[in-house]
Image: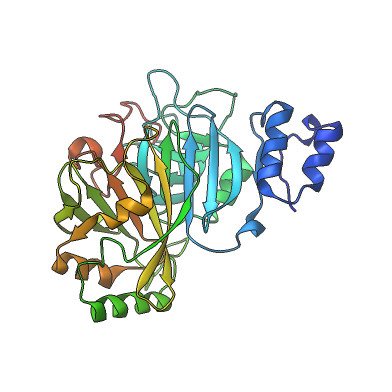
Length: 339
């Protein structure tokens, strides 16, 4: 078991022995926290726990920690530094819009921001930076340099990032899903079978790459928005069973086909106000899209497709210029660290 901690000397005695010998990631995390939590700059990286699958990232602002899941299994945990007072990091759901390994800021004296994963076009990103042990950035999420490099190596444009005050562990969900339930049985089977021929979007862009597709469902709008590489491909009305009941805030990441019955396998993460809305399994069964819209999504499906469900409206204050974010705050920081 590989354990990566920047300051190994801080983990002494029995605690250090426990960290070196345990066989599960969760025990490692518990032991590290018991010592006095991970110190600024420390991180844990165990990619062998889940060698493949779609990646999802959760940033916990209260804990100043970043959790990395691959295939629904946590493979990384790192300290971070989010926005300081007056430059707070917005909470909500984002997808990575751009990657730049050697980014420099045009706002802050050409400051280096290595291994940048951009979350908004107005200036919020994940990147390497100073970690003093408390929120200190201009809105970005700063990471230890080596951890940011490891994270950069597993993300792709379209990888979901949840920045929240609370969240749940990803849970498996198997269901035809809102994007296919409106299709005829033979159409559904054809769309699901086609997934076996598709791969995750590549970590770097190139000709012939798998495009990144995201789907946003807003109960406030009763609309579904389909985005391909950040551009709205289609949108249309969606029906919601028991519309008086909130859906809650959920992120579903498509893993692939499940068995021979035309079902899809998702990993779902809930966030936002605890207890608000249905469980992910119930939510995905409450949604029905127009058959024509469902067919468009079915044609674009791929492993790693992101489905975001929210009770918020999808208007200018919750969407960036290109691609979408679903924010708990109405506006982004006015002086974010990226151009």
